[in-house]
Image (cartoon, rainbow, N blue to C red; front, top):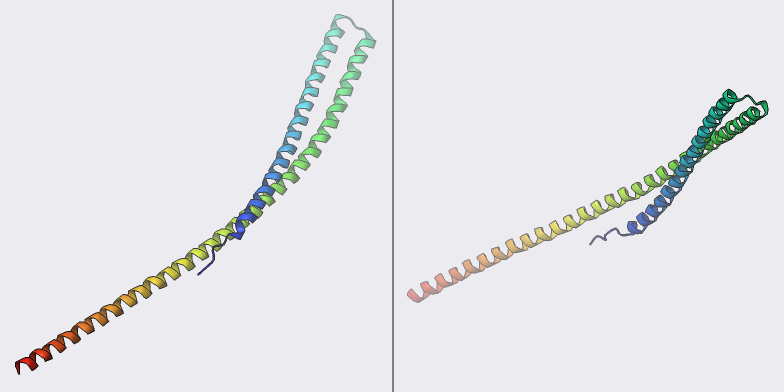
Length: 169
């Protein structure tokens, strides 16, 4: 009798765990990208507000020292935005690597699942084949028994006819 392929269940659980870990790493990397983007947007918003404030102060009263401070702060925000852009690019690279690792883990898990499915299909086919052999054997035995019973019945009928003829004759 064929053995049921169970050794793949543990391997699939391991592959699923690996996939879950990769998914968590990807999600963390993606959150870092999103966080960096939101920080960059906050810097951009602050920069716009600083430029607007500098423009208003220049219209109200033109103090060179004060306006220079506004523009120095705006330049600082611009540098921070550039640094944040570089960080976003780096984090996107990390996220892409994590996504690739996740896809690889998913492929490995699906490969084991397909292998398990194929082995299970082969097992089920073998079981059906063995069951069919048993059904065929049972049918053959039943047919042979019917023939034996019919032959015995005919033999009894012949014996009965001979005894009847011997009793008459």
